Every structure is written in structure tokens, then in C-alpha cells.
Length: 576
Image 1 (cartoon, rainbow, N blue to C red):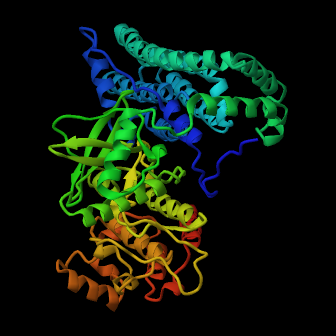
Image 2: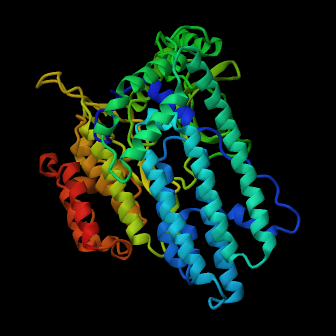
Image 3: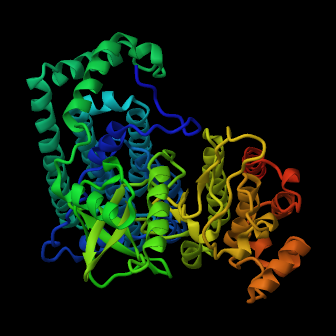
């Protein structure tokens, strides 16, 4: 029977798993225009694009509503872990935010003594708790079982929308607000539901043609859960369904993952083009299977090697498209750069953790008389930790959020170091920690990341190649010629990134020349008095600084492991 993936288990490279994740994401909503006279609700819908930190800061002081922000944050985090019906769960998440914001506006207009507010707040709290419980319930299911139950999950999401409607009516003084909001969000839900259901029904029909009855399996799952209602799901519960789960998996693999053959002209064109320039074979499994179109007039980031644009996939999902520049006139340089590009893609596609930015695939586009290669990943609306905290550092509750972000980064490194062979990030800095919708951190920036080949023998090591431009965050041993890549490098880098995230200042910010920064690093770690903001923006600053100093030991073997770092961070969080 397929095993449920653990964040610390070695990642699999199953093409079925990758295609399943792509299918499960589906299309985002397409909100229509607000009806005339409903500017209030239309504005609230627009404001659902705000980050959870911004919403929390606005709602925290509001009577009855402020205490519910904690539960709204839990909804955000639960939705991020959802594996199927994800677009529908996201619509429900945004509706939760809208109901809270509408309640806050009514309280501001009518006063907290207005009848029904206290009852409405309690009802809304119960609804938010139930939403989190149901998302987590389905997220813990084996992904093939949740796929089989797709229709039932969708029906339950609809009932949760209706539960929020009742809460909305409790807060809505103007009757049109509730009715307009219902029509607006119900329309979005039905549109997304129809698009997703069309895809599911197509797959159900194809499975039926090869003898797999998904409806029958769904009914058996429901009966099984009725018998064990209230009991924690375990692998023992799934044993009766093992034969059918395996049959479903094999059928889906045949249906969704045909053997890699040059049947797609676009895919083969990419492979042939790269091969003609570089003599480098590119696995078809790395290629993005959907069109990726840049959103006009937008640029997220630019440097010497690439530009990052917001873009849209063919299914409407917003993504980040990282377009690389290659020197096509120098065949040797081109071959080297393309080899690095493909090596990165091969490694990144195997990383499967909630603390690692997902990899969607690579593609190629023509540019004048040459070509450009690009990588695609989810678009993080909150950008990276440094940008996110520039806007939100002084908002209520951010001390705990900052500690959580640094902990998430450490857990991401722990995942990399737990793989076999081990993987070293070697490029830690604040801008390589991206922030999810719920304010959690995920690692990105894998340009220098490499797997450590542990069986090369005592005299063989993996060396740092490329030209890193992250001196401020680099461990002193990385300045040596042919520096060996080992996990203590990431422990040092994590501590420097944490100093930057917490204080808002880059390491050695007073110095601009590279040789001066290198000299300062070899002399010793940063001094606490140079970063007065550190004490202001973190809980338990003394304990945190002592942890950073341990990570900055000049001798790599004297630094704690990243597992030790995570344990220390959890102790600090528990004592805060």
C-alpha cells in the first residue's frame, strides 16, 4: 500500500505524485463585478487579498471579532495543507475573512452593544473551528482516498459556506449585504466547483472504462468511517481497502502518466533545442505540462542571471516564472550554465516538504534568434521575509510570527539534511525565505544547493561551484578555495538569516566592501549591540542570541546540528 509522505522522509520522484498535485490544485476563483449598490461588500471582497498579518492588525482591537483572529489564522494554515478541492477551500477561507471584516464594520457603525453581536461571534467561532477540523480531517486522509471522495468533500464545503451565511446574517444590519455577498461568493464557488468536477468526472469515466468503480469505492470509504466515527484515522483502518487503493493507483498511473515518449511536439522541441546547444539530455518529466504566460507590466525580481515575473498557468493559477539568461555565443559557458539549470531542476523536483517552495516544472520560450529557459513555482503573494516584515514588523503579534518564520526555515533545512544523500542549501538569507498566505516560511533560492554524495569515500567531497554573491551570510570555511559543502554551512547561514529577519538589518550592514566583510566574518560573529532592534522584535532575546552565537562557532564541528537548533527554538517558543 502507498505510504503517506512524512516531511522528514526521503522524497520520492514519482511522476504520478507530481501530476496528482497539479490536478488537485485546480483553478482559482474569478470574482465578477459587485452588483450596483453593494460597494461595501465589493470592497470587502477586494480586501481579502490582504495578508493575514494586515487583517489581524486591523481586526485585533475590535470587540467580539478580535478574539476570532486566532481561529481565522488557523483556517489559513489548514487550507495551505489541503490536498484536494484546494480552490474551493481557498474560496471558503476568503469568505471567512469577509465575514469577520463585515462584522467588524457593523460593530464600528452600531457599537458593541448592538443586539446579536455576542451570539454571532460565538457562532462564527464555532464555524471557524469546524472548518479547520474538516480541512485537517481530509488532509490526513491518504491522497487517493481523498481523491475518491472528491464529490463528498465538495458537498461538505458547500454546507460550510451555508454555515457562514448564518453567521453573516447575524452581523449584517443591511439586508442587501448578506444577500449580495451570498450571491457573489456562491457564483464563484459554483464556477470553481464545475470546472473541478468536470475534470474529476472525466477521470471517473476513464477509470470506469478500465474497470475501476470510483463511486463504489467512495461508498465503502463512507461506511468504513461511519463504523469508526470519532476514532483517530490509522493505517489499520485502511487495510480492508488496500487492494482497491492499489488498483486505483495503478489505473491512475496508466491514465495520467504515460511512458515518456516524444509524443508532445512542444516538449520534444525543448529537449532537442537544449541538446543541440549543449549535448545535454533533459528528462521529459521535468517539463511543465501547461502554458505559462507572463502578466504584462509586472516584474518581481531581476539580477545578473535571471528575471522573475508573475505569470498565469493555463488553468488560471498565479505562479512565479523565473526566466534565465544564457550566453549562447560561448558554447562552453552555455553548456555549463544549462547543466547547472537542469541539475537544479532535477534536485528541486524531488524535494517534497511543507517547508520547501514547490517546483512545478521547466519550460522554454523563444527570444529573438535564441531561446530562454525558465522555472515555474507557486506565486507567494507575501514575497520574502524581508519584504513581508518591512510592511508588518510593527503589527500586533508579530514577535511570535517572526519566531515562527525562523523556525520554519530551520525545519526546512532539517528536512534537506535528513535526506539521503544529504542536501545542503548553501544560500541561506532572508530573501530566500518566502512567506505563505498564512504567514509561515518556506525555503527557496536553491541555485547553489547540492546533494552530498555520501559514498564517495573519505578523500572525496562535494565542492562549491558557481559564484555566490551572499558573502554577508556565508560561513568562514566557504571562503577557502574549493570549499567543501557540508551541513554546518547551513547552520551558520540560518543564524545570519535569522539575525536579518529579526533585526531588519543585513549582517555586517555597516560595511560595503566584500573584502572587509570577509575579514569581519573571520574575526568573529556579529555583536549584539550593533543590532538594537533584535531585542525589540523577538521573544526571549537572550536565549535567541545565545543560540545564534552557538551557530556562529568558527569551527564547523562545534556548531549545533540543525535538528538541535529546531529543538532549541521550540523550547524558546514554549517559554515565551
